[in-house]
Length: 248
Ligand SMILES: NC(=O)c1ccc[n+]([C@@H]2O[C@H](COP(=O)([O-])OP(=O)(O)OC[C@H]3O[C@@H](n4cnc5c(N)ncnc54)[C@H](O)[C@@H]3O)[C@@H](O)[C@H]2O)c1
Image (cartoon, rainbow, N blue to C red; front, side, top):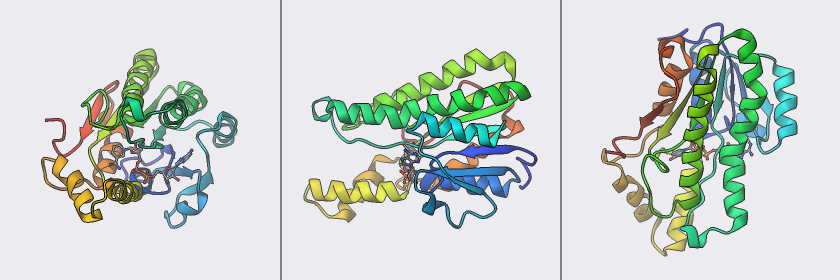
C-alpha cells in the first residue's frame, strides 16, 4: 500500500540507521513529508526524498530551535536510544544518567517542543520506541536500559492520558532483538568481553527469540506506519510488541 501518510509531516529522531532509518524510509514511501534527523548527519545520506537535518536530542536548545524551524507536525517518532549492558552493581551514576538523558529525557524534550504544534492542529501521533526489555520483561544485564524503557512506557501513557481529548495520540513500540548497526557492535563487544566468537555471541541473541531469528528494522517500521496513520485513530496510550514472541 502507498499513500497512507499522504499530506502528513513527520519528524523522526535517530533516523541515520537501524529502526529510525527504516521508519523514515517507510514514511517517505507512504507519502509523508519526512524530517529525518540524527546527531550524525552523514548517516542520513541516501534516505530518498527526506529533509535531512542534524539534531542531537541531548540538547534542549537544539530540539527547540529545530521545532521552531519546522513548525507544526502531524507525527513525531522518537527512536534515539542506547543500550547499557550490566546489572545494578555494574551501573555507575554516569552510565545511569546518560541512559536516562538519551533514552527518556530526549523524548521529554521533543514532545515538549512538538506537542504545542499538534495541539494547534488538533491532531497528532507520537510514536516512542521503547523495548521488550523493561516493564514488559526483565532481561539480565539490562538494568539501566530496562529502567529507561519502562520510563518511556510511563511517559507515553501519561502523554496519551493528558491529550486524549485534544486529538493527540501517543503509543510505544516494544521491539524484540532487531538487526541494526548498534546490535552488531554490541555483539562484537560481548564476544570480546566474554572471550567467545562473534558467531556464538550472535547465536545467544537469536536463541532468546522464540522465532529463532532476529527481527528486521522494516518489521518495526510497518508497525510505526500503522500507529502514525489515521488507521490507528482509536488507539492511544498502548504498548505494541513487535518482538517475535519474546514476551510470551
Ligand atoms: N536493535 C534492537 O534490537 C532494539 C530492540 C529494542 C529497542 N530498540 C530501540 O530502538 C531504537 C533504535 O535502535 P537501533 O538499534 O535500531 O539503532 P542504532 O542504535 O543502530 O542507531 C541509533 C541511531 O541513533 C543516533 N543517535 C545516537 N545518539 C543520538 C543523539 N544524541 N541524538 C540524535 N541521534 C542520536 C545514532 O547516530 C544512530 O544513527 C533505540 O531507542 C533502541 O533502544 C532497539
